[in-house]
Image 1 (cartoon, helix red, strand yellow):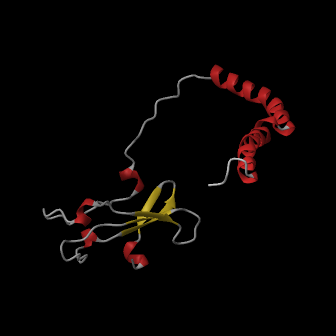
Image 2 (image 1 turned 45 degrees about the horizontal axis):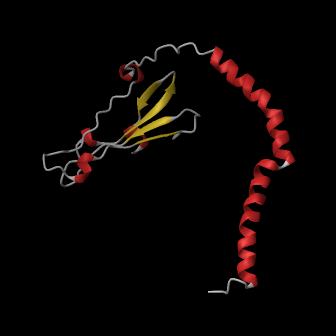
Length: 147
């Protein structure tokens, strides 16, 4: 340990408060920060005041079951048979992308499989690809697309 009168010890003791003051001044005491704060304060206060005046309650949010109108007929099957395999407890997946390049988002729905063999020979377990026809209507193109 250095002696109390050594140069190194004195430098460390003197530098700590100085660094703290420099950091504080750099953040809050600089002329640019003060100018920025003074210029933006009126705009922030006006925005807050307008937000408080227009605090009317939002209309209630309603949901509707649109499954029949869209043409999507998909039921997720897990292949569960009572032994609680790990894959039974996980959800399936969905991908939304434009598979045919028409600019409309198409939907690919992933289904489960029979357990424990993970067989997908039964058409009920097939994954499904739905082409977006526009107007919120979809057509099942799984077999035509070769999925």
